[in-house]
Length: 152
Image (cartoon, rainbow, N blue to C red; front, side, top):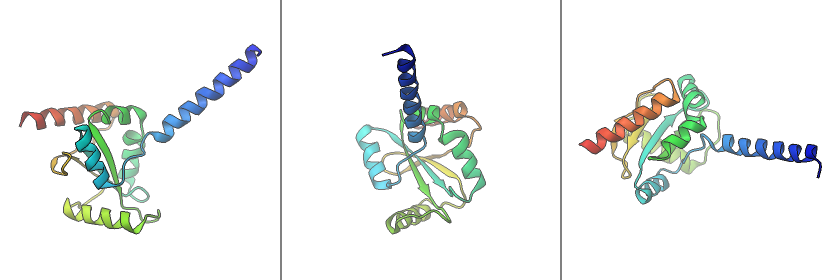
């Protein structure tokens, strides 16, 4: 095998690996009950994002600038199961998903989007998350929230 062929194969492998990493960043749980079960099993909290992904400008910005970043996903998933509850206007959803999301918005008294709640594995809210403007600041806020929760 020539050096050029090896370089081409290596480049293709690297690009494919990067594409898989990008595709997986920002794909969160949508089944709330399953997310609670996973959080309980792994002894994690939950970061629950209420969003209007196809119509809400602040939701789109938060996803683009924070939640879609691999650094955020890797950092947050250490301590949280990330759940995205979407309320789109144009995107298709199953009836079961629509029903679940509607019930959860009512239960948690969601009045606007985006709303990000930090919860324990039973679904008890311990903080309404701020919206820091960088991945690093968001991860810092999550860590300080966990520390404060453990203190009380």
